[in-house]
Length: 105
Picture 1: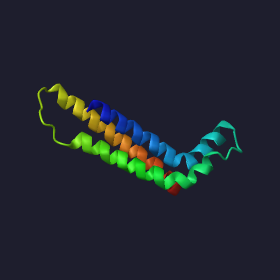
Picture 2: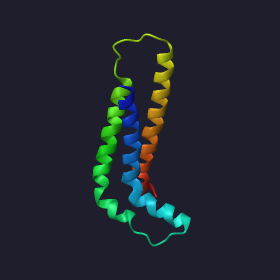
Picture 3: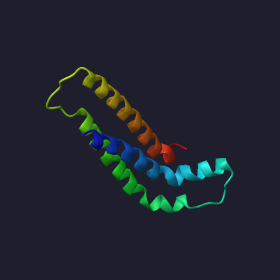
Picture 4: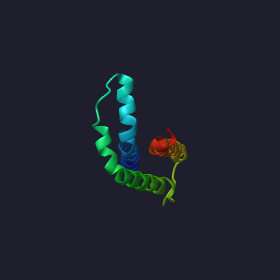
């Protein structure tokens, strides 16, 4: 179960970045001084797919994080769950911010 949540967290961040790379990529390259690379703009047509995958992975992460456990044996499990929930919400906020980036700027 631990591996599934790590994969879900990582997948969420990767797809959110991929969904925004067409808009954020040129800004990063311009900041680095590389001006005429249009590689990232070719990914614009895949943006809806990346957005769909991002929300599917975020939903899966919330499901695995907030579902009821069958057994709760130790108190250290509560601290681990709290940390997982905080990380999940931070990742979700970052992912949504990356997805909204083209519309806000």
